Image (cartoon, rainbow over all chains, first blue to last red; front, side, top):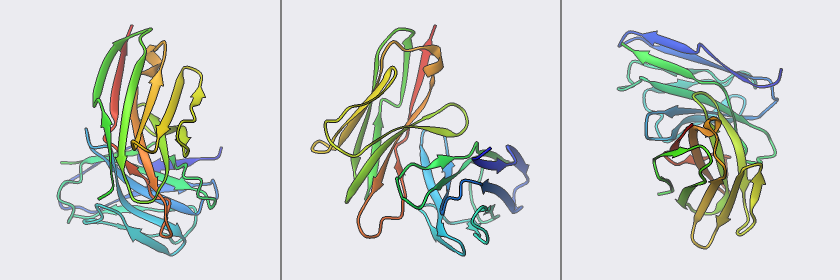
Length: 113
Length: 114
């Protein structure tokens, strides 16, 4: 099946711990994106990458880090510096043609206790 | 600052009703406007609009863009309980630095009661 997978679906962590969220796609898409969704606030862009080994900060990058070592993978690390990490995290990808249609993964719900 | 505003934020209707969801935007170098439906998990793509006045239609859903008034609407006729979801509007800014980024509105939560 072609698509975007995110794991895990639910994640619980203690305050002060770093945690890494996985995002993998087999759509051969060049661009990948990480969003955070909070109730009543829509989606906010954390980081994005248009090509392997390159990525840019989005609107709310503080307390997060990413890597793009492979085209298929774009993991997001939520560090202890992120003040309010409990949220729903969505990964998306987009093809080279820049048709503007981003395809989303199923999301990871992170709860920091 | 680029922004997208949706209204209403939430809406409760009964099956068979027709609903209209609104999306207004302020962006530099507008390229396209997209609508997504989100049912608990991944948003799924509904429409992409680039030209004013041309209605896009898919079954009971339709959408139109007004680039002069910086506005789009999403209509759902004869609503069903399966239409209950969060509807997201997003705008893609264009220009030479276009990166494919999307700017999302807050979403409209639609609940359709039987």
